[in-house]
Length: 133
Image (cartoon, rainbow, N blue to C red; front, side):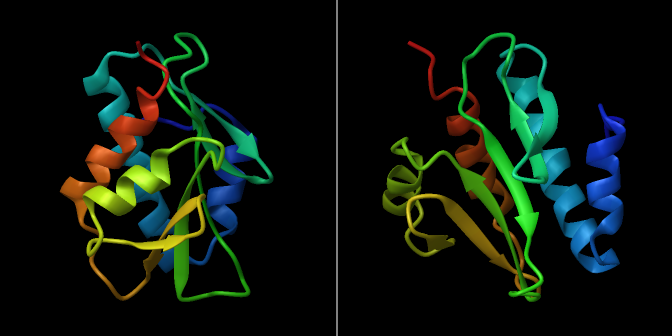
């Protein structure tokens, strides 16, 4: 797993309850793994709305991916996508039974359910290459 690019991002991960932290670190690893495989340049790790976010700032090839957990819904965590894109609409069409969606902005995961990693990898790749011609 790549080291954190900023102390602020590391602190956010450290503040999550241990089971949630493990799940979000797994999502983080997947994002970095897919970014490396896509060859879209370095991935910037930062905070957006106080949550870890991943951007292809150098190449501008992708759309931001953000992830997080809310105390109001302790049994769920999510991966967020720009709601001004067609990403979630596309994911709904491609994977209608693999994921739970929240509006046009998120894939929501239940802490007790297994994440469909292969399907999610396709979603992450689509987000990280969204602006490629």
